[in-house]
Image (tube, rainbow, N blue to C red; front, side, top):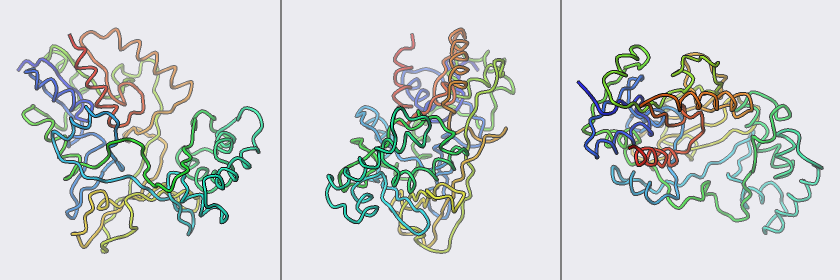
Length: 366
């Protein structure tokens, strides 16, 4: 069988490309290393609840064309991301807003009250911040940093904030309104029925092979298609000839609980060092599910990447960015291969930007 396009990976980038090419009448084959489609947005049904297997994913965008595109496949609900932060037995609203500030400081009622505290504490840092701790304090002051930034960040990166570069936190949003909506985007929601349903609809009518590793028979797969869209790790494609790029990973502990409501919110961030996990996800709250007598929760633990684990976060430092740039130069020399998506570009992407990037790639194909 001969194909116009072979797409390596059935995540959001690969599935969008496959869908758009199929609409153009191209013959497409999608191969997927895992035993399911959807990449990291895959959801599986447990006890009647759509569980985000690889961590919480909330779709949000300002791109109307992207919003219209995903809604052409499935209906989205009105879920609004409003996480809360817990440190010991204290609860705070996220992102940092007037609800947060009025609880941190008993005399805060108005935005001016909050700014008075924040601006006074920011004076602690004089000159250019030398590390992440100083950068955070220069943005929001020590009280917010100690309660809501330090512990979470150190768990996330497995390093002290004083040892992390300042550029990791370029800004910390301070909202002087009593609004707990985490995102400012115009459109936001979760696919009703889960993200797997979205990907299934996108790939409808397209040949997909699961449990299929491109690198097990690379020459063969290259031979059966005119062009390849590759969405895997860029260093793996080149057999790590320049060295391995670094990542942070995650470990998940998912539990079915015999109660209907465990924490009252989809996402609770644990910002203290009293526990090892960074957040707890209660999946039923993403789709306002009150029908199941049980609930499913996932404890999320940041982890150093080890071989065989999933690659979640790129390491945004000079060493890895320089190495990624060298791999991108190699990629330009590959004939009939398009590299796209988070792993292939060694770049963090929000979901809407992944789709927008796929739009651009397909529109520029000649």
